[in-house]
Length: 198
Image (cartoon, rainbow, N blue to C red; front, side, top):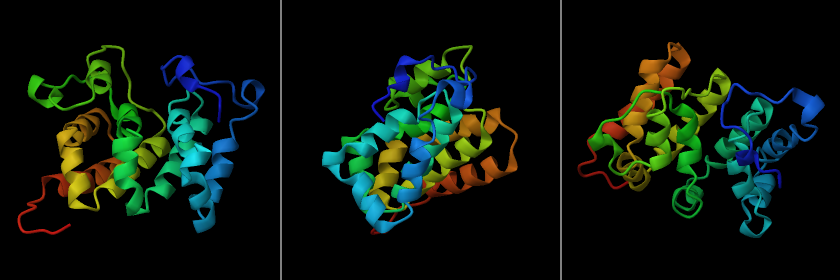
């Protein structure tokens, strides 16, 4: 987990040649299995262990096995609503979920207001591509869907223009499963929050 994939190329198509070049690629998958147990999640989320922040970085690796294991673990941990604010505010983890969704479909000036500059700068790059592994895309979107559970976090997602990012992905990809998850996210983000407590 000390390996920093941000030093790699950010092109998701430049995949490491599996086990020949990356003998540690399955570590995040092992940690993901731990996250299925309550005791395992507590260990992963213990701040002094610094495991969870390391997983956020691993989700950017160009090795899809690393990416899939890391985001699977993140999704498992996000079933716990109690960590959502910490995840978004202290760890600034939302961008790690959103960045893989972005391709070369630019946002409007209004949409960029409040959006992470890393996100809209990627969209302005004519060579930019979204994550091409459908299973990893689904894991990212399912993680965002889990963050939609409470009104406070939904408001945060709106301010970060998650709707626009998901909309652009939906316009860029023809996949029924992806479309259904995006539809659920959009329903949460476009709902009338009037008189709701949560």
